[in-house]
Length: 385
Image 1 (cartoon, rainbow, N blue to C red):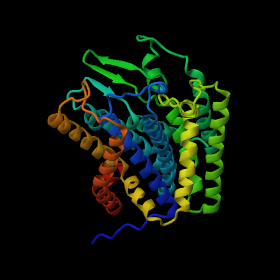
Image 2 (cartoon, rainbow, N blue to C red; image 1 turned 90 degrees about the vertical axis):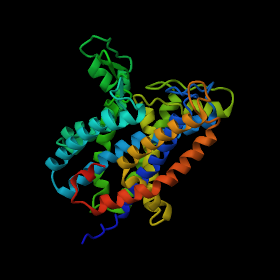
Image 3 (cartoon, one colour; image 1 turned 180 degrees about the horizontal axis):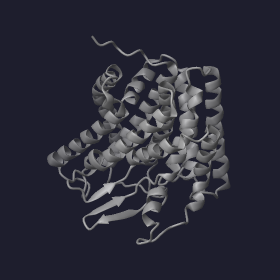
Image 4 (spheres, rainbow, N blue to C red; image 1 turned 45 degrees about the horizontal axis):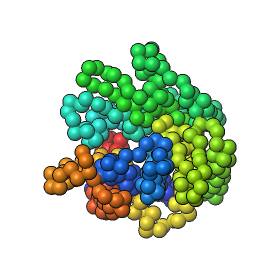
């Protein structure tokens, strides 16, 4: 007979709940990318032509990647605490990181393009998390203070490199496109790679997540952990505001448009590809405060609902991509291309409604898989999802 896994502690439940929340934000953004492509947004967005509702929806999704990567680093530390050894955590990070890179190049890319063989491979968030895990597999051998300093230096200093570019044909073009300069890599005459998520800043974020690990150790005081989360979250947000008011380093300047809405939009219009220092400060500051709030919420029902999504993130990721693709193809078949070369909704409200309906529909299969993953710890491959 198999027995049910013990319920997670409050510290781990809060981690799953935060991951679950940003998964739902991700779902909203991917519904937008599926059914609202006729209203494309740039990075950073063009405030003069972007509707506030669309701006808010896109900005909300900015939380996803930084929180995913931070919690990946934190989870790696907790994995090492459980299995008691840097060697074990390093090996796991390397294997799972490699698995995610392969997954991005195969099932994830096919879900976006439905092309086989592919002519374009988009190296997106799963790729970035995978490469960051591989990097962390080496970095975990560093003393924690040194790793913390390295993570902060990467996040705070990488914008100095924004003006550094290497032309196609240069020996540095490919590695620099992967690390920092979003661009195209011509792999062959019939295949191009798009480095949508340059990985250097994400390596800094995953390092910070790993260094947070002792706050969530079994022996750690909840009061101390919550104080650290509050200080770190507020500190990051204050740093964001101070740097943004200076209107200089690492970000496109914000503009006073003469009205509160557009000026506020401009102030929070930050760069994701690659994520600027201000992008990371804002999103991680909010993420840490949300984590604090979730831990204090204790046994609230909504926390446990969010934690279901966060307990099986990769399963949800793959499932929702294929569901969205099938829904889009079915819509084109039924209604045709009603927005130029796309089928799309007329307003952002329909995007939100579709995201809510999909989250509701996907809850039960995700809960089933999360329970299977928790119960069948003897099945090795399940821990990779």
